[in-house]
Length: 292
Image (cartoon, rainbow, N blue to C red; front, side, top):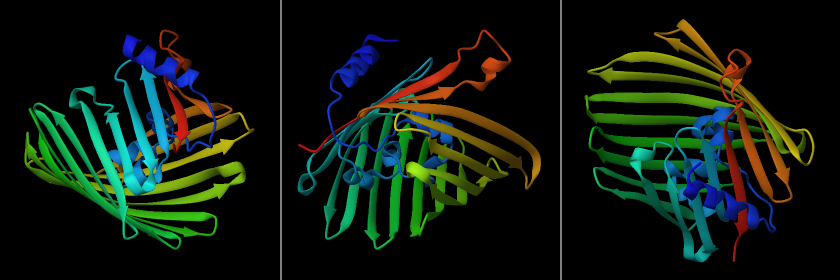
């Protein structure tokens, strides 16, 4: 563990105060494998306009390889939300973001001022009744790659169900020219104690210098067994060229909540077959310090 990571973790533990938290970190989402179909603070990387929906917030993930963290400051909604976060891919540096609600529409921008890894994102979204629409455009100009991305997502609440269709277009300029399309939908069912189960189907295809067709199926559960303990598990099935060459993946994990402080653990399932592998693949820490 680096000194920087140890310091952030120590601060996180010492400042456990009050407020209800909307837990979010890369460890939790890597276990659930829902992608950006599920609202989470880490996906403000794709939807900077969603920063305005979160109170002042701090998270950090610690693993054997890359590390990532983020902090959101919201003095008051009328002044907007400021944020700084590091991507899980550490060589892409950090991002600075800002979001503001104007005429009931959320607007957001993000920028990564790192040499040879310039990234810019802009997005807008609106919530009306039990529905939400988000549109985003992102561009990246790096030393070895360059791309543009457009994302459109719609969410609708139907009783205990959430239905979330999404479309994403990624146009790659370097190191090869190609256009990647992702079409998918998630159906989420809320269950006891703020838990949920979900199923996601996604069709992913690329055209250009490199071509492929892939189908992805995901299913998972997050269940609160008590006020202190949350159990998570998700499974994924991947197919190449239609429904051929299937591969599958299973990710277990759990979370422990102590007052307003939560630690999430991603269990390394390969530990069952290799004793030299660590039992915990990563863990995430969360603290929501509210508005001030």
